[in-house]
Length: 354
Ligand code: SF4
Image (cartoon, rainbow, N blue to C red):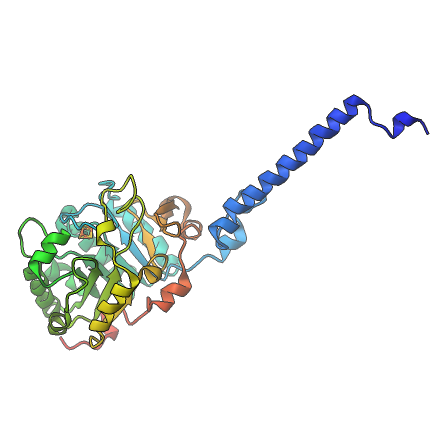
């Protein structure tokens, strides 16, 4: 055997080095791909670590969008200091496109739709919202259609026209002290937020819509005792949220709000809950329960993934369909069920005394 057959020439050595380097780089690249496409994003990532394409198995097994929150507008007439869905765009889909998206969601298993914002009654003086509410109940026959609003733009005429198609109306109210509402920014100028709240409560009763209240607990209202007022208003549900920071919305450089001064500790939140333990309709939502347990659609009908403490959008349901878009929603179905996300949500089943 010649020595040259077992000892490589300088040229061969160079080729060996290049080939080894190539293998090493490929291995590192594959690991990084796998971290970013798989492990780092959580086990629900639909992107294959091998070729970067959508994993069709995961698309096939995608979450059912049982309960969806469609924030069709970001514009609002209030200036709540902790707002976590701010007016970063003024875009609203054309009505027919919004209806098309809602139909796709219904075909994928949606049972409940909640319209939110921004302030949903602001666009086209509530007509856009009314038409969607009617479409979802009458055409799509959804068991539950609801709205979250600050209540300032709602007129009785709206109830007369669309009240039949609406199951639940939630009004945001963080305090029964007008001054505190002013400090929070939960007001338009010096107009009374509370007068609207009581007026709407009565309309809900008159037009047979279930009435709900949402409150965000923060540094300005954490010591308040709302037991009497809530008992008097008697909502079907009182959702009590712990003020949440979301990067790009109410925290961080690109945010339109700075909510740090509103944030309260878990302990203070618990003390607020303990003070209201006699209120049976109270449904608490800590930061942990809230963060990933909502399926949120933005104004372009993109699911927003909140797992990284900010809102990362998927592609639009209108462009890629529900199954593909929902894979990027970051939705935690277990937490959704743990926080009581599925409840009696049709007014027909609520056995309310009107
Ligand atoms: S009412 Fe307040 S929290 Fe709600 S969208 Fe308007 S500014 Fe934001």
